[in-house]
Length: 54
Image (cartoon, rainbow, N blue to C red; front, side, top):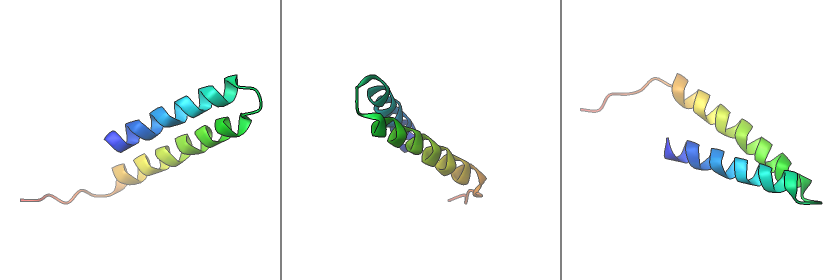
């Protein structure tokens, strides 16, 4: 869960910097790709059956 939140935070920061700074549009694209990758990771992790450990 911590990894999910850290990647979302990094994507938001990169997106803001990419949107505000002139000529750094690629950072906005990287931020968007990070959000998509993180959402895919979250969906895969939720759908995988959890194994109970004793």
